[in-house]
Length: 236
Image 1 (cartoon, rainbow, N blue to C red):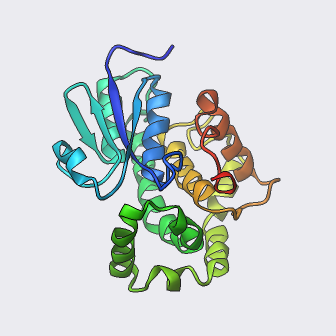
Image 2: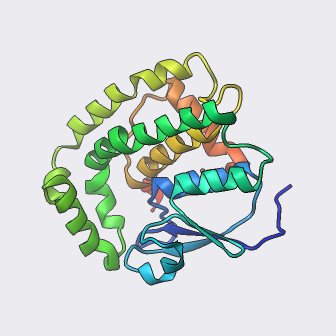
């Protein structure tokens, strides 16, 4: 049963269409809250609305407001939830948390730059007008290229993604989830990554008969179809 004792809010990045939840990090927190069976209200948020989350001490989302507590950053939110609400743990002890931390860094530093190159040409038109200048400037600063330059060759990025995913595919061929018989936070980290790609792009990064496809479809259906309630790129 979902807990309703405390009014929770989750500030989440959205595009021009408020139904387009474009942030992999916000999806991590969505799944973590669902795993904990904790209810929350979604607060659609744009990167130019920094004043709305000033109490969090930062300028990026997700931000969880749990009663009087403001917690920013998906990793901090997951750690806070496990410390504050021990039931339905996200981490199986210190070793499980260390594994999830590795997956967190691997996704952020290896997968995300590749996926960005593969999907940006399709994603940028979904971006809210108020955020477009920010994303143009950030992309130029981070990659040294304009969005149009980065998005000109998505196929080479897609090939690199498929190569990078081969160890994950091999692992999921031998276990249902990275958490074993049931998903843990490491699964939700990568679910957030691929949900971002599903929302941003029509391209597929694995064949429909792969273990990755089976794993992702299972997580889309988890928690009464929380992930599947998000329309894919083709429906936005």
